[in-house]
Length: 493
Image 1 (tube, rainbow, N blue to C red):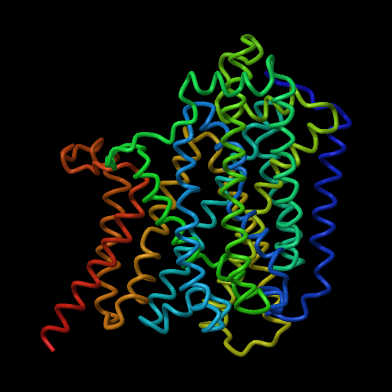
Image 2: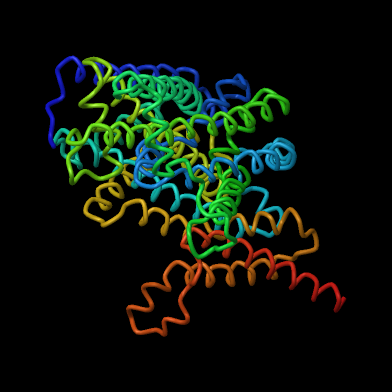
């Protein structure tokens, strides 16, 4: 299955990487203060911020997993995208005004105001751990198809992609991240549309064949509409997507930084709508690519190796079917998807380290030069640790499953605590502590009960729900526990 990448495509790919790094580093002279590095001075245009939010949604996981998922099954995963407008409406009406009002460059400043320092420390540490797991998974999933198709060393790809992003994130700050995200988002969309066009051209019978074979195999199904949360049904994915996206919009540092990078409230809301709504049709294009590839290879038996994994079908098509030159551009698109998410995670993590830890507990009144040094050092260290995490993913049975499990454990309680603070005004700090502890126990049970069964625990005590429901269980348990404790305390007073 290994192919030799033509020299022209390799040059196109390398030129793209060098141009992105150079473009990102060019913003370094504009970072005169920590505020410039973390928020761009609050003067970035709404369309660029919107493209950056869109690019944050799309990662190498999306670029490879969405077509792979549609190729293997159907459009059930697209229901996640359908939940985004509902979460975006809540964000635009409640979360964006909230963060614009408090004017802190930390998403977790509010939690300290509401519940005390412990809440800020808990949430910020959970965020950092989640980002390390996310970046590691993205880099590994970026390297895997390159290894399968070209024989490129997985560690080499992880290190190369990681260091490339570290360089411009460390030097250019949020402006470099947002403007490179905007460029990479445009390349992503153009590359995806080009692939659809080429499939229509190359498949015998044209676009009609694509739809005929897809309909015959029920490839456009959104899944079962049963109210069953033990399997991947329409409603399970919808609920899961709503909670994940509420977490993204409500408590994710990378989104909050974009809210306060806009010039005013109107631009912040506009960019949020743009970034979130743009992802819906673009994700549909990626799902359609998977469906079209199924029809393409079904109509031409023998073109696809028998043992190829679903997530590698799209890269295989890029290598085998695209004209020379375009292959390099599409491989650059795959890297663009991963790099845009990595740069966002590095910048937002550095901001958390500075705002929530260094300036809070180590040196509150440090000069601007020291703040900038901390931001750049933190960016570098987070990038290096993320590379090590990516290398640790090498050899796991399913990197995607490992990422979902780690994300559920690390971030499952953050949304519940945030909603508890916003919706239950009389919830005291002690009640919130108990609620979070209950939530952690529930998350551990839901995430790890399968392991406990192998250790001899009764199977009846395992989590009967789908794994994706872990964040729902964790959020609801924290919110309901805090709410009930507040009612009890109120009734006693």
